[in-house]
Image 1: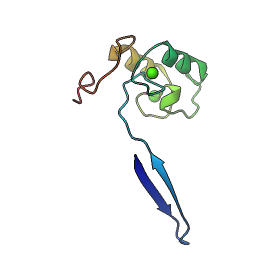
Image 2 (image 1 turned 90 degrees about the vertical axis):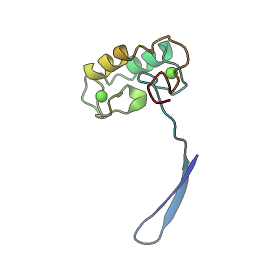
Image 3 (image 1 turned 60 degrees about the vertical axis):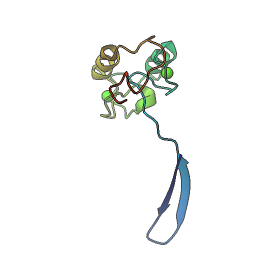
Image 4 (image 1 turned 120 degrees about the horizontal axis):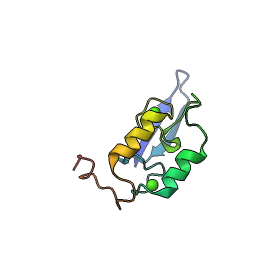
Length: 94
Ligand SMILES: [Ca+2]
Ligand SMILES: [Ca+2]
């Protein structure tokens, strides 16, 4: 957990805690698995090819703020679907 505090120019501040974790491409709910729940989220959010602003949980896996065929390609290319728990080592980070 990270404690983050933001202060505006008038001196008002607010603090919050952030959880930081790695996530495998396709893991929309960040539970460590890439499975049908993630595909359901990807399809169910209805943002595919709409041009609407999107985030990771919507299926924007390449971070360009949109869900499109590039994200589907990234999901398919990852090889993580139904592969069990995805580790940092599987992602080349461990
Ligand atoms: Ca998942
Ligand atoms: Ca994207």
